[in-house]
Length: 280
Image (cartoon, rainbow, N blue to C red):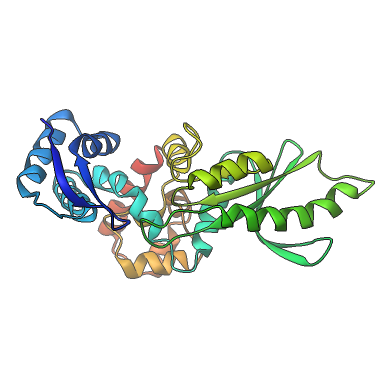
């Protein structure tokens, strides 16, 4: 069913072998049936050629999924959909705040904390069980750009500057503080090593295992609106500019679709797609 194809081009620009087993796993993750997965892999395999990019492969698989069932296609394009939250990175901060909010945290975005040396605008503050989590987000707008050790190094210095005044207060508001670094891509080995050594909590697309961004999204049904196959790019931008970043939010605040002039029939289809993704 699968075979190794030499000389494909990865998102980083590197040439490498591509195993169709990886494609099979991502299709399985979308919820597609075994028969549909086999059909898509067969079609994609027929179109492979030396030097083909992973983006072309995934775009083809996405198009085939979309023809069969848009819900599968939405889940399949999750990683790409997070890139589409850009280019400023602010919607990504809202997205992370939303994931944590629905995980039982009290969250705030863009708060300013006074440090020992200077004041700092913090991407996300998240409070749970007496712990103040000071979260900085590093957003990349395209695949292949990993988060290197310079990022946790820089964020650790900012965290230390704001931590000292918080922990030196006699009337402590929080039991403890914890610094986070969050990225929508991956951490390099050095970044992971430094984060662990410095006591930072690192969260990325695939780290930590079992509790990564993609794991949290699937577990909680907290998909970004950019996964939608029914909303246009203009409509997605309209919603993101109004801080509607989660499908769950749009279900709860569907009046925004009226503001967009969406017809009743199309509104019903969009909300049905949103609700399916949210597992409501």
